[in-house]
Length: 136
Image (cartoon, rainbow, N blue to C red):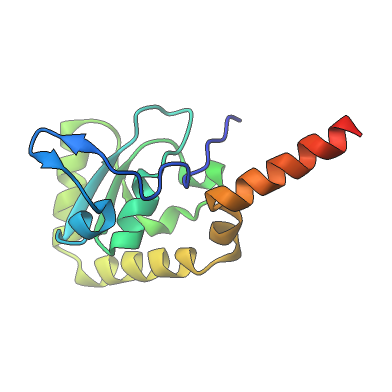
């Protein structure tokens, strides 16, 4: 299994067609929902974690979250089709308790030991330690 830390691009500033986004998390927090579409089914990027940090409701299209150590109940997942995404939106719009539970699970994940272990500087420190011990 390939693993790319979800924390690699946290806080990164992106240019877009409307201008530069100074604070990605603050911008996302202005929305009720966020559609998170991963670029590949082989790794998990920072996109879902950004949405969790922003406190918006995540609708997720990407690889299986549990295969990357994240609980599956931090987002509503959908297959990468218009029909599946539309059905997921209808599902979350019609179920306030589901939305509240998903948002609560996201907060709990952000407070978890797993999340703290995957923050980029921790991952890099661990990698450096493993490389150093392998060289000795």
